[in-house]
Image (cartoon, rainbow, N blue to C red; front, top):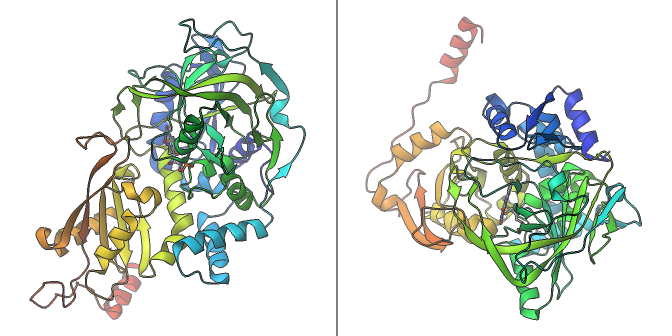
Length: 498
Ligand SMILES: Cc1cc2nc3c(=O)[nH]c(=O)nc-3n(C[C@H](O)[C@H](O)[C@H](O)COP(=O)(O)O)c2cc1C
């Protein structure tokens, strides 16, 4: 059965020896971050951490802080209630195979139908544990007044929100599930976009230009309408995972979460805005984004391992905070890899591999190694049949959703293990003539990438590290890779007792 709460998930981690409880007071300003960073850098992602007495400027918070809860292959599988994420990949493959789709668009719509059929559709309920405590606010319209929103009895100042890195512009909510709706179609989206705390009732809303939240925002701005936004923290970890998954615009993350957890998500109406949220989450921040209102956001110690500079982003005004009485505040930090987010991205690639394979039948395996912090590096292995097939795969990937950001793509033959970076680098160095086997294209770039001369656009490079076929401008005979005979291997295995 699905987790009924974030707390239940933490109890499961505890029972499996995957959770370390920290019972001494630990400060939310940098100290939890330093502790978590060491844990995330330990072998296989270390343990999840539960800080039972986090302090905010020396004062103990009423809510514990959980971090690194999905930061290993085992924990991300546990978060999704799976033995291995490959089990979910297999289910997706079965849905796609029921009636083989002819192209990617058809594949996604088939997947959507499949999710509906599997009773993943949400249910609507009147009450939820996320509203056990309700705090409603009067907002000072901050665009007109310089006075910060403060003085509310309960506000963001009561949440144990981390300052992650020394030069961060403030405290940041780092695991928010941001719910919005397209004002024209009514389609829901849930994305994860960090939020910088400006004052007790105001934050930044860091949806980057390519993301669905930003597209919804644009629709509201064009209509001149205030945009309702609900931000959920905690609950079943399947929600958080779904918010980070690069689902195509229009595929509902709540439906996807229902499919993952094999149970409909129960949705409860918000108190002050026209949106619904999962009833079992720990916290809900209700509020709105006002068209045209922008404010500098950052700096922030980012996924890239560098600080992202100040940049203008929309402003989120809170109209209410609701929460469970026993709420636990979930968070993460990002930085020099490997960090917790690597395991989230890694699970996404493994789960959606069948969808990639459907579009590229030659694709054998694919990974985004931690050194590439998601989009900087992609290793793909293919069963190559015809000349320039590796280039076809690269161009296909560059045209596919958030894969458009892939800065370097290395394509290898099917007998190379893409999860072994050393093996891929060996093939890259051995099998390529740089001029013949590389291509540089222009494409949108990840907003966080500081290397391109201009933000959001840049060059991307692909390497064909496969063996060359006739027609690929190679005029010699391709050599054979060294391999010992099976017989010699068996003899040595028995002599060495392996
Ligand atoms: C820990 C974490 C933090 C993230 N922060 C942001 C962010 O601040 N802004 C952003 O645009 N994407 C961020 N992302 C990536 C998005 O969540 C991801 O691209 C997601 O697919 C976006 O959803 P959407 O396609 O529905 O917009 C973050 C991902 C993770 C795992």
